[in-house]
Amino acid sequence: MPKLKVALYWAASCGGCEIATLAIGERILQLAEAADIVFWPVAIDAKYKDVEEMEDGSIDACLFNGAVRNSENEHMARLLRQKSKILIAYGSCAYEGCIPGLANFFNARAILECAFLETASTDNGGKTLPQPKFNVPEGELDLPVLYDTVKTLAQVVDVDYSVPGCPPEESATWMALEALISGKLPPRGAVIAPPATAVCNDCPRIKNEKKVRAFHRTYEIVPDPDKCLLEQGLLCCGVGTRGGCGALCPRAGMPCTGCYGPVEGVRDQGSHLLSAWASIIDSNDPDEIKNILDGIVDPAGSAYRYSLPASMINRARVKP
Amino acid sequence: MTDFEPKIVAFLCNWCSYRGADLAGTSRIKCAANVRAIRVMCSGRVEPAFILRAFELGADGVLVLGCHPGDCHYAEGNYKALRRMTLLKRALAQLGIEEDRFRLDWVSASEGDRFSHIVNEMTEKVRELGPYKPREEARVAQA
Image (cartoon, rainbow over all chains, first blue to last red; front, side):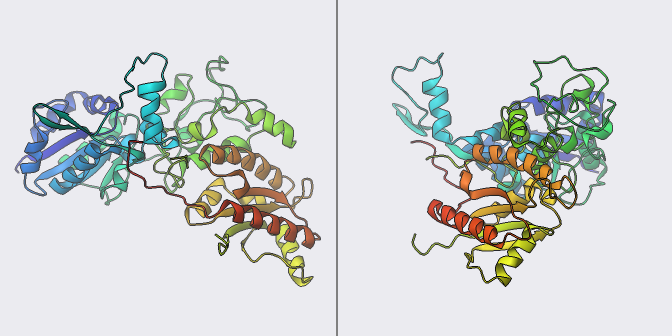
């Protein structure tokens, strides 16, 4: 059997997914046996031009991590879709927008002004902002254009599979790679991760009836090591998040932040988390409820930390 | 915008608010025709996702009506709705959705006039705000 041709790419991401790919350990040798990596900017020296020259559909599978938030990301998403038989949204950014997706609370102008003009440590006397085109003696240079709205990969091109996680755990990464190597692929459109319900099912903490009189931020309390973190007033996203990660964060005393995305069958993870958190408040008094809810400093940001671009209201409406 | 007729989705609880709406009808109380009523068993059944979905599908405003506090047919469902909608309202504000586009209130089975009052008031407020446009696809970065 001829070797598979595999490409890996990063768009708007932090690079963590690249490292997560290597977390499969020595099984990378199995991958190397079965597949040739034809494009992987972080590891091998192949240029965009090389990809452009490949025949359409000549890449067997592309693991695409990162969201789409500028013209370069979009160009590469379209190009790799065209060249790949199977396109996998690998990791939370490509799958649902993730941390870069929080930019959807703002727009491009506000972000550029904050980064280049307003921050206290910035010394930008000429008030220079990135320009998409710039003339130098050698010719015209161009930079990718930053978009107002961060998009998931599936909002830009057709995606065959998604792998959740920020970054994906090696169990999910290997599931995807093994499926590719063996050719035993799940139905198109599937989210590839170990079968699981919510993170709570993986979490060993003792769970009782949830009744909360105050919400805390993680630095404010030292949680009981055995009890459910949500019951202790920490904003744990485990109740509304796909399991399969092994509940790593709650095991280590940190509340789940929701990186595996919504549980199967749910589209809007954040609204379910808002619903769950509010439901457990132990009060029927409107003013007291408001006071208790003051403990949730950033409701939308906490509930949609990883999923704003993929959610029903995919961005905030802001002044242009 | 004089010809703009807001579309308002209203989730009405089976035991109080839906009957209040019914009473408004049988009593021939005049009422803005902008509300699309969806009957649910309890305001506690209304998930925040329902409200977001309504906005996503083109509603200009969303109304959730339940039994008055203490009157819930299921004892506590409306309190659950109160907690959820209070938090949802804060998240909606962060998403730039104007406060007047979403309202949680209580209407009993005998309050046909109150139902019509709430519907009329909400319709006028949303009419002033104009249509809700969910997705802005502006792509130009530089100001």
